[in-house]
Image (cartoon, rainbow, N blue to C red; front, side, top):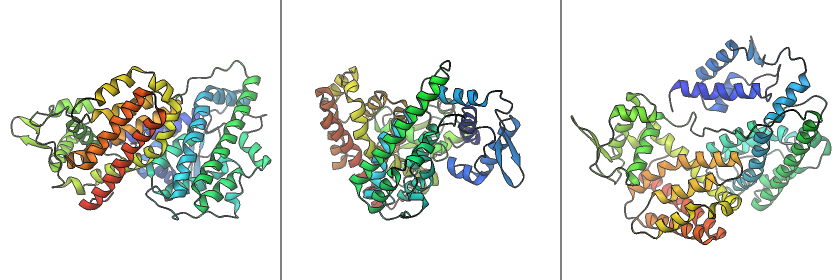
Length: 476
């Protein structure tokens, strides 16, 4: 949502949790205001307000001409015990975040090497003989990997990686060798090899070497946890609690409401001729102001799917979308399309991984038979693909990966805009055929066919929508 309070709370909560958990220990320096604004996709004023609130609440100290430092934890009688408590309490979150990085990021960097993302191939350069390619741990390699993802042009992937990286940070416990330091001393050359393959544009070698790099990081973290847990057996580990808001700072509130209403029109939940709920009802449903709802309804009118009847309200005018009026050129619309394309690109890369992780549990769930029954029906059931995606996310054994898939699925609602724009097109028929094949493969227990069909659904949508945007002159 675009309201300042929402962005403020998100940034404040993220930094506060890192401080309390020991990710940012007592005395450590926080990023600069400019770095915070860039990391969380917020304005300088929001970053400044967050820092002021953290100072007033006793978490940080601010200094003139120097970066703020963490005040929380000062006066603790046993620094090692405090650090161990912060580490072990978050063990499940850290380990599952590392496991998710080990699952997702090799495929993501392989896509960068192949030039499949919007930034294309050759838009980044890596110093083949410099300090950056000689470091053998994920901590010191962070900067260059962020630059690679930024050059790849997918802001959602960059934000996802940054959130996983923050969740997987291992606080230092005095008296125990930190995994990053161990990796530096071992000098196995894993990072240098992975970067060399990426720089050369070798997709498969990039995937293989990043898999080795992350497997080493997971193994070293496990040994570190076991050693600390043996010394502090009384500390309880909490359930995994990874959180990520993929929309924060990138999606306007009224565009988000409009997107959700368009999805309801596309799936038939709101039929042509039916009236939308009142402004007050929509305001309460989406927890936004009436002004935000009015802007969302104006966007629907510009898209040609709704009309306002004086004294009666707003009704669905058509299930066919047009790009007239101001919607196609509005910043909020363009931002929404950009986020949608980012999510679609990322989903195409990770879907095979998601299917491999959870297909057994998913195929045994009641949703499998239900999906197959719906796939055999007449007409276009556009709620089927979303239901298949949500079921796949819910079946994931890694909680962070489940959150990522749920966030990506929610960002895909803008796809319904383009389905409305192309009634009766070959692409619509191809998409529905892919969704039906995925549902039948799920019911038959055919993992490969299921993954291929679901990936083909989103790949076809990506190709079709890119072409349609070029044809209509809408850039994102």
